[in-house]
Image (cartoon, rainbow, N blue to C red; front, top):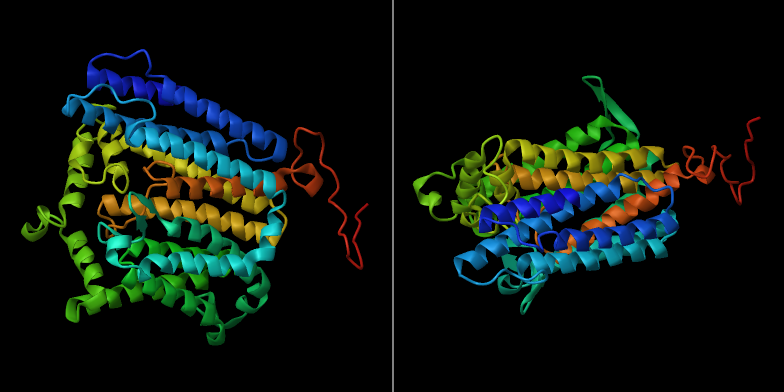
Length: 460
């Protein structure tokens, strides 16, 4: 929070030419909120990974600081007084942070054992599919923003159900693959040193592939389709330890994307939107795109180029020239002001969060926990890749929000729930009573008795 306060002070110095007496207040409020969650973790998950909350808190705090920077610039342009702490986009994000942390604390208090979630796996799978499909069946006026049908809009309120769907689907995929991992691990033939699965075992992958293509076509978003399909394929790889599943998954996904592009060019219809996005991605500076559908991407690339290595400085850039800079393009707006080095440092923090999630997956003893933690950590990393790839022109643009950074309550609450689940699993992994590494309570203890087991192996 000291870093967040210094960021806020620099923004005010560049915007106002001075630092106000209240620059530190948002950082202090956030510090109190995160301290409250820390206390909940200390009582409910004392062995949880101590790196997760500080790393996520830094990104969340910088997100609030940048959104408040947009509010300040807007107030100066319109000659309005300094925005209040809880007003504007930054104020709403501060309030959403409070709600997200309350949800995370409730999850930690209610779910004392992550294995309990497996009892509701099929229910969660059904809920996840329903949440994914709701925006697709709604009319565009109630679900579409910037060409992607990912939202449910009611009056001035909007929610992105797909953010919560990914949590439900991770739990369902983990439970399903724990039950089917032996069958899916069987190999039929070996090619170039890689064991490939039997054709009859491709059913689940083909099903999820078709579901992802439906998302691509009807919700008009490549990133969401890639997120769901990539999540399943990687979880399948973790469960079976067969690289052939990754190869099959990549071939199927990119084959489906190419097919959608070709169909969009020839027959149009539901594939036309993806064809248009792909065309913009291939040449955003084309005359027909540069001041029309490609304007967002062009301004994003120009902003990143203007920032250079070190950036213009917090509060000294022009992020307002980038449409949707508070949500989809927040990386571009921040990248202009903190430069390549600052943006790289921010990505390293994301990488650290993903690494700690994967570490929890490695250390936890049960298969369900391994797949849930690994799937959630990968989901977070893939989402950041999809967003950054879109604003830099690596892949076509998507409607995804940047975890913990972009404005929006749906994304913030869903991702804090994801962090809470990682904290719960890491607590089980690191707890001495569960056979994990020695913690504050003392040396490593023997593993808990296998209740209900007919036999038990005891090593001297």
